[in-house]
Image (cartoon, rainbow, N blue to C red):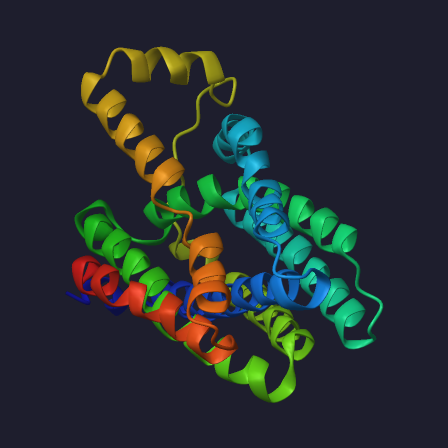
Amino acid sequence: MFASLAVPNYRIYFTGMTVSNMGQWMARTAQSWLVLTVLTDHSATALGTVTALQFLPTLFLMPIAGKLADRFPKRRILMLAQLVGLIDAAVLSTLVITGVAELWHVYLIATIDGVGSSFDSPARQSFVSEVVSGRQLSNAISLNSASFNMTRLLGPGLAGVLIAIIGTGPVIAVNTVSFAAMIICLALLKTRDLATPARAKDGGSIHEGLRYVRRRPDLMVLLAIGFAVGGLGFNFQISNAVMTTGIFHRGSDAFGLLDSIMGVGALAAAL
């Protein structure tokens, strides 16, 4: 189950990724609570807008980001994307802590985060094949998923408790540390042990990728499933927050716990 952790580079990468995922889950919880209870009067519309702005860039930029990940070193792309996230987290936490944060600030920073994530995601997912050998690749991918869901299990609950104690600003500030940890871990990877991926002469083509997918009915099915689940099932950032405050009339600790419980099954499945 943990075979890939025997690879030194993957241990470093896994550590940084886990810390980064933890910080991001905590920050997402704090950001949702900030919008719902501090910057608005429990406006689900505002919370939905923030979520949309955070993920909308992915729809348009992901093909371009994938092409760049084919052409340029993925580790460099990851470090730049993490640096963008660090700056965003530092700015937002400072605005909140100083008491000058407004809703449009969150909208703007969520959009920038979405752009950064668009370039981070394809590079992150494909970079694993450079860190471990083909024989260990499926195990490493499973551990990546386990890391994501483990932090999804722990991060929101911890964030909910900390919000009640120290407020949303300091919790968002924790995310700057998590981004810094990922950057440091990427810098510590031994380049001589990384596999050199084969690159197309033109760095890959978006049209070629689309044509390839059209020729693969199995991939079309997976994309359709992903679209359905992402569009209809991944709205818990909005629904959980609104249920916590509007239906159960509870605080941030209950909101964080509700998000954490969702990660239990996902973590078990990944492992």
